[in-house]
Each structure stands twice: as structure tokens, then as C-alpha cells.
Length: 170
Image (cartoon, rainbow, N blue to C red; front, side, top):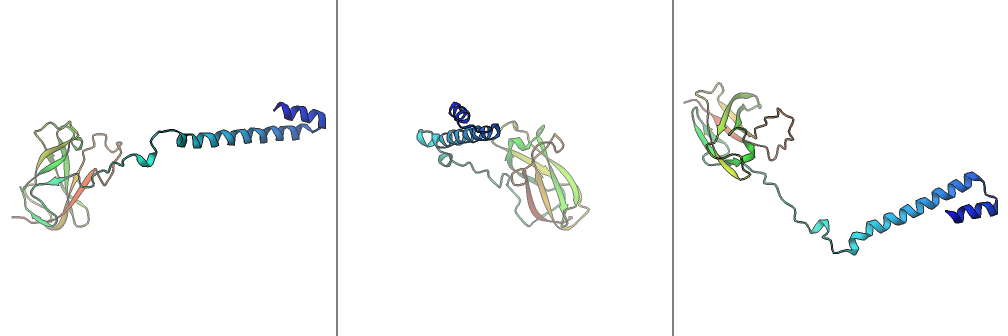
């Protein structure tokens, strides 16, 4: 900067030109420092981002023991399986029965008697309603419980599981 000032006085450069030269000088210094900072990690033995293992989130977090896609379900049927412990709130989570258009037929509660405040899988049991008001093709929606009423982040790939079923009354 001092060189610019000295040169400006000896060469009779206007103040506007002097300010412009100072700005250009600062820009050159900034770009030089940015370049050094960008290349600095390559000069160290620090691991690169691409060397870190990528943790895959399982898409199918619900494991059902006695229900598969397109199974026939009946009133009072008991369904068992496992889900991660964080799906529960106060040892339960909702299961929604839906018709072919996604309309809610009923909501039942899956429960556990195990310690649910864990990150590992926990067994659950859910009993379907006494009767169905709808028969035919539909689905069961197993959904992570959300005590915050929608304020918590929700990922449809890991926080819910839909099983297509066929509803039949006895």
C-alpha cells in the first residue's frame, strides 16, 4: 500500500485512481490468501472428504414378522415386528389403515413392553380394529411417532413404512 501512496504522490495520480489501486491491491492479496487456504489441506495428511465412509440409512426400517405385501388382513388380526427404538414415544407409535385412495379408515396403536429408549430395533405388537368399515385394496401405514405435532424433521424414507394389503371382514 505504501508503494501505491508513494507512487501516487510522485506521479500526481488522482485520489480516485489511488483508491482504485488500493482496492485492486487488496483484491490481489485476498485472492492469493484464498488460493493458499484452498490448497493447504492438500499439503497436509488430513483425510479427504471422499475418504470418509458414507453411512447408508436403511430404507426398510420396519421388519414385519407375519405380514407381507398384498396379504389379506382381517379384524382383530395381531401383527408383530421390529422398528428402531426411536420410532416409539411412551412405548407406542401409530399405525394407520388406509383405503385405496389413501383415506384414513382407522388408526391403531402399536406397542412394546421392551425398553424403547434405545437406537436398536425393538419388538412391537399391533392389533387391528374389531371390524373394518372398508373392504378391498388398501394399505397399512406404520409411522414413527411424533410427539412434537409435526415440528420435528420427518423423512418419508426412514420415518414411515407402507404395506399394501387387502382388507376383509370375517
